[in-house]
Every structure is written in structure tokens, then in C-alpha cells.
Length: 407
Image (spheres, one colour):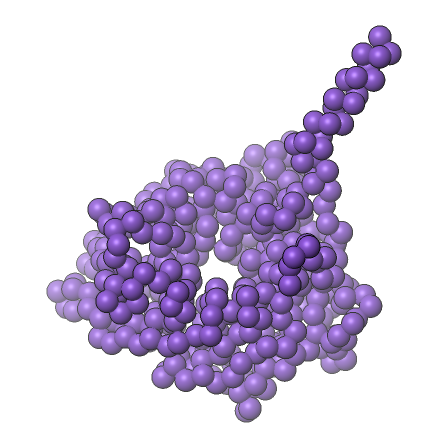
């Protein structure tokens, strides 16, 4: 009997190691884990870092808050390099754990909506005024989330969420489907409706990044296309109807891979980052009185290499709309004036795999927050608007130990 018990115990230990049980240990609160997005709660002055976990073996991604109020004194007297405590005093509590492979998220009504690719779900995380997080008080079935805080998606691998400015939709793209669906943000358990169908015979194998304008024009970057063409799918409304068009840029950009897309907030223009060749495609458009969608102009801007995320914002201190292009493997960010796609400045200090970006107005000054995918830290920069320059202030979070062979 004793021998049998010892055998069963040994088998259990073996199964735990074989099935990855040792990976379930969560990272300490001073660690992010491959951050992919930044979500800002303007009313309560907290910014949330969504970490994907990705594929390096740390069980569960996580969401952690950074308090802007706590950050204020650090901005006045920043600890830039070799900071012994990694400025972790700005991180709010321990955060929460979520499923693996988190994606581009949305914030609405004190809730963070996080797509979970691996689990085909959307986690709904509740926030409070102090920045503390919760996603369930009942039986946890995924990280810290229970069933009432998880939304099953109709298609596989939800990737990008964007919330419309009016109405009640959070739009969801999928890496394994050409559809973009609407999730009711007030009643997220309600049946999901297809908002745009980007398959339409062009063999789009999935939709990656998406963005939506104030007039509900939705532009997407496809995950992959099998037709040999390089199309930019978009949909728009006209007189109560929804129309879908595929803009053919095969002759201009060849077989380039579409990465990220953002729509200008000041003009009828959108931007897309591309790989191989590494470019930014900017497209000016209009809609005729009969509802016909037309391209009025386009421009190709060369990049160094490895573009990842785009971000468009108009800082209050400058008043001009800026386009940020992160180059994840080159540890730099290019900043353009969207009016003429003029390169204003390059950010290259304090970066290690820059990915998500967010500008926040703190006491009349604009600060750029950058989530570093590789080091799993958040870098903060002060915009000196008169000089079109971003000064590196500090980094938040203990850097992730690099695996063998990483650089």
C-alpha cells in the first residue's frame, strides 16, 4: 500500500511537470509579462497595462494598474536608469491574472474588455476609483475570472477590440475569421452580431488590427490573404445601409504583410503599417453623394524595419495630430506630423521592444507611455512640444529576465 501511494505521488509530480504545472506561478507584482496594450481611465487617473503572457512559459497573462497620482512626484524627480526599486510604487496592488495571448483591449464604463486569443473569450475586468481590479467572486475558471466575467466569442482567436464613440458596440476582430462582430458593451452576454464581413470571396484568412472612425467607418488589417492580392478591407455606412469595399494596393505594396491600422481624427485619412517592404501606407478618401467610396490620394513612407503598432493622437500641448510608429525589434519609435507625413522626431532611449503607446495629459504637460514587449516594462517620456522632442523620464516595472539567445 505504501509503495502504491509513493508511485501515485511520483506519477502526480511527473504529470505536473509534464503538463506545465510549474508554469502556473504568477510573476511578482513588480513584473509585467509581455505587455501588448495600455488602457487609460481618464476619470480616475489610472493607466492599465495588459500583458499577453505570450509564449515564454509564464502561466497566465496579467493586467496591472499604474496610478498617475502616485507617478506625479516621480516625474518631478525621476529615477531614470538603474533604479533600485524599478519605480514599482506607482503600480497598484498585485493586479489580476488572465488567460494567455491577450490582445488589443478597450475601456468602457469602468470595465476593461480584454480579448484572449488562446481561450476564444473576452475577459471583462472591473475597475474601481483606486485602480484595483476584479473579474469574479465565484468559481474561477480562467485566471482570476469567473463565468460571469467571461464572454465566449463566436469565432476563433479574438485579436483586437475597439469601442465606437457613439452607440453601444465594441467591435472585435478575429485571426481565424474574416468577420468583425459587435459585442454590446452594456449587455456583453447578449448575442453577437456580425458588423462587417470581410471574406466576400477574397479568401481573407482572418482580421488582425481594426480601427473605427467617429462616422463608423471601419478599416482593418487582415491577418493573411490567400488570393495573391494585397487588399485593404473597410466598411462604411450610407443612408442606413452598410457597404464593404476592398482597396487593391497590390501594384503599390506587393505582398507586404499588414500589421496595424489607425484612422485620423482630423481628416478623412487612415494609416497602415506594413512589413516586407517596411512602409506606412496613408490613404485619403471620400464618399460621393451617391455613396461611392473613392481614394483621393495615397502616400508610401519608408520605415527602417520591423514596424509593429501605430498610434494616432493630438497632444494638447502641441495641437497637431501625431502618428507614432513603433519598431519593435529596432527599439525605436518614429513620430510624424500627419498633415504631410513629416518625420518630427525619433525616440530611441529607454526602449526594449516598444509596442503599445498612449499619451496622457498630466497637469498640463503631455507624457507618452510606452509598453515594452521585450523587457516587460513601461517607459515614460515628456513631450517638449516647442522642440518636437520626447525626453525619457523613467521606466516602471522590473525588467523581465531574458531567455538564452534573446537580445
